[in-house]
Image (cartoon, one colour):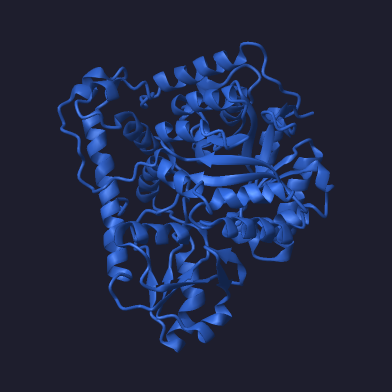
Length: 507
């Protein structure tokens, strides 16, 4: 039996663990049989007591809604708390947000969604755009008024100071926050704040993108008696935090689900267990040589730089990495992407340039309780950002070279994803409003993006944009192979946003 917990003051009871749809492997998303297998695994979780299924339009390479539709043919709708997400970049207006919900309902056949997120909010400025009159949140509120969604939540990747303001806005009934052994220091105050305001709290990324189970021995001391693995200890650690309603466990295969099921079946945190797990996690870090995030270096820095966030991002380099990350297999590049992913996705700290603002005075190192080479690690982190084009300056230069001032009247973008919307938001940040009409393409027509239709490959000949910009990091090569021959035949220039050695713009 899997424990059920109240989602704040909404009246909903959620299972202590939920399952996501974003980690299904590429090999399972190529045909109907593979999609059926994905849905069957979700159905097995639901029959075992899970009632939270997390999905978004770009998950599972755009097949998340279709997988959920197949799931709802296998289990009763009332047995599932289903999520849908609106992003301030891809759904910037109230009309866009409402259309996103309606199209997701049509795709899944769900009739209504239980959880509607303002998804992946990275900054206070982005949040303020979303809640302005006529913005994304207005459409979400209208969807709830019409009975298309039951609860409004926010999914946060913003810096802690911005996240606090957003949680204190009073607009949301729950929040989706990151919490794991690596992010425990910055996440704990936000969980406490949300819970104190009567909000339900769901947890994403409890295994730190797989880094925790990949470093089983390093984090072994985080285990308590009864934990069969470090991964199980990490899942229970996140779930035992006071105020947490549900931990989302991404599942790519049966083994992932079995691990999550074993961690939560019949388990309820015992009195005092949260404190014991926190002490065990702190002990694991003290023995590892990793930055513990204590924050003394921030107090010592004469410039007040975000040294703890830089150092915790650098931690990723010291951990065993997966054999493949974002489609990359080179170990050195994987380590670099892991560091930059934590920096940008975890802390919203995209460097302005590749030049470190650190003075190299050494006061941070003198204050470090772990006696770590802080200035050297900071310098290396900025070198990584420079090499991977993970700076605002590099983004601006790339967009300037590819799209700005080239006289394009109509520019095609493939795929039609939230990442493409972010690329366009970066263009607007640097150069102002678009001087060209964006036209969105994907392998097949789909839900609208930024209020514009999404066309299939077969529409390229009819619409014939001045160029086609490929914005996918992981699947850019596959997209070029699919679209390249037709673009060559139609004399449409094919431009790639990413070059070898780059880092993604959206992690």
